[in-house]
Length: 362
Image 1 (spheres, rainbow, N blue to C red):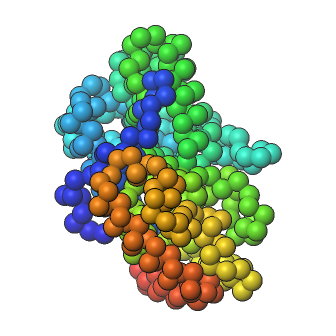
Image 2 (cartoon, rainbow, N blue to C red; image 1 turned 60 degrees about the vertical axis):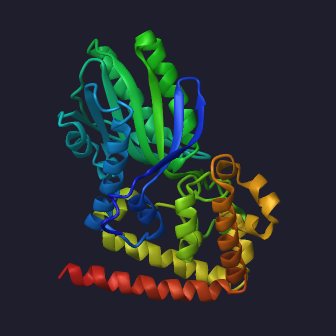
C-alpha cells in the first residue's frame, strides 16, 4: 500500500498490563499491508515497515514517549528493518544513540537457544529510553539481547529508564518483557518507569508442531493466527485477501524477506506447492481450523462475541456485526472452495511476483 501513512493508527486496543509491563496492539495501514501481502519484499518491504514505525512513533510522541534521551538497539539482522533511529529523529529532531548486537538462534530441544552473539557495538546514554524493534517468535533473542543491553548500562554506571519494544510477534514477548522488567528493577530501582510492548496488528501464536503440518510449517518459528488477539483492520483486510489466512507465517523471516528476496520468494512458492499436495487429502475447513480462528465465524453472533473478547470489549456493536457478517460470508465461500484450488490460484500470483523480482535484477 502507498499513501496510507496519513491515516491515523488505531491505538485503542490495550491487551493488558502486568506489573510494569504495558501491552498494546496497534494497527496502521502499512503494517496491515505487510502481513496480508507477503510477496512484498526487499526495499519495498523495508519502506512499508518504516512507514508503519514512523506512524507509531509519531503517535507515541503524543504520550511523551520520545522526549527523553533515546537509545536504539538493533538486533542483527532482522531488527535493521525497523528503522527506529530515523523514525525517532524525524519525530522529535533529537538524534538517538544507536547500538548493534548479533544474535543467532540454534535449535535446542523443544525450541531454540542463542548460539552466537559475540558482536556488539554500544552507544548508550544515562536515563535513556531504550527502543528495540524485532520480529519475535520464542522471545529468546529479544530477552537475551536486552539483557545484554541492561548489563552494559550497569557496566557504564548508567540507567535505562524504560524500554519500548515494537514487534510483529507472539505472546512469548510477554514473558520476555516480564524478565526485562525484573532485571531493570533490580538494577535501577524506582528509576525504571515502564516496559511498553507495541504489537503491530496482533499478538500471534507460535506454531509448536501440529503433526499434520510438520511437513509445511516450522515449529517454534512460524507465527499463526490461532487464538491470536489482532486488530479489526487486519481481520477485514485478510478477508479481502483471503490467501493471507493460509500463509505459513504471519510475517515470515524479516532478514530473508529484506536481504534475500529471490530466495525468500522461492521458499514462499515451495510452501504453497507443499500445501497443494496436502490439499489433495485435506479440506479447506480442516486446514483453516488448525492455523487460524476462521472457524469461529460458523458460530452464532452471540457465541462469536464470546470467542473474540479482544474485539467485543472495545468495539461498537454495529462494527462488530459488520465484521461478523463479512467474515461469515467469506468463511462460507472458502469452505466451499477446495484447498487445491486456493493453492493453484496463489501459486499463479507468486509466479508473477517471482518473475518481477528476476526482471528487476537484470
